Length: 522
Image (cartoon, rainbow, N blue to C red; front, side, top):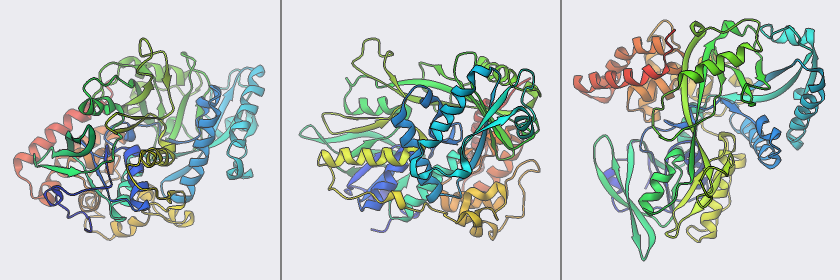
């Protein structure tokens, strides 16, 4: 059967798949792409929207992880840098090189940061290039490249390179890659129950959360890639399953670009809690973060704490000449990291890992959790290898190392696309020729009517939130303008989706509740 955007859930009743993936974030979508390109008949379901959770609320970095280098987690850093190079090759429309300035105020720290970040560069191995070599900059050169850096006591800085990206657009690109290769994916579709034969998984019962339509599917290989919700799925398989997730909340501020006049990112080398902080150019703004707070409750729309905002502002201002005020903050967004704990460790908090880990239950449910966005492709390889080792699927070779992702363009072609639309890649040719491309939704947003239609027709957008928070980044970039634009977007979507006035009004109401969490009150 040729699966495409017209496939209906009811058409799949009792069909058998080589594997079914639960979870439509970066991890689940990465596994889906790997699986379908190996030749497995694959289906993915997501309870909310693709990348609704952690995968759209990251630090916007594709990187090896400087903080992990400081922890001497060399293997993770090396693997991530290798994956970074693969993404640069396979998705140049999504990846942006980013030069980081690390200011140094203690002369005794110069060798530590310079040699440490030089080692970071060298860990790239054969992918390293002289162009992006780590450099020691004088005080004058530092101020020239980052004029907002605090000059009092400044000795020098270290310049190194990583990449930035749009995390939600990356997830949608993985979705498009998966479906164009023949995979099938449904958002707003929830796992209700596992089916079993002789104590082993044999399928699932899933339900569309919008239409309430419910069907059964068959598969011996079912992968739980639900991130922060992993334990919830594991207990559907085994009600006595112990927790493996220790949630950690991280918030980021999106700040006006004029507070960071140059285009260099800044690495704050030491915060008040002995961590690091990033300030990264992103579209017409700068993303600053992140915090790291242990929490108990897991929510689809997490609530930031006021102290997180104060923490980021205060630690930024310790290193800046141009002080950040709350009035400079355009928005705040909050995500939850699924850190892994040893379920058998006493207290369940002593062994928290930033690496991914794979768990296999007695019924053969495979759970993959933790890890970094940068290493999603490698995590997919490792997960499918476990499935092969358990004889749940035949052994086929991965091809994703050289797989060009949907929208691929050569770098010299990407730079010709206007900045707000670069992440569309080759799809920009379709988008710019669609009706409504010349009709802006709001004067303060890089959003037009064609993008709404494109999101619905090609990217499975079903709600205002889908369009404004993830298909475009209007909500995190300018929540106030997005709130003002919401009624017009709802009107367009109502007509495109053939919905009622009641649907439109409910959409606006729900979206306004979500939007409030992005707003900053002075």
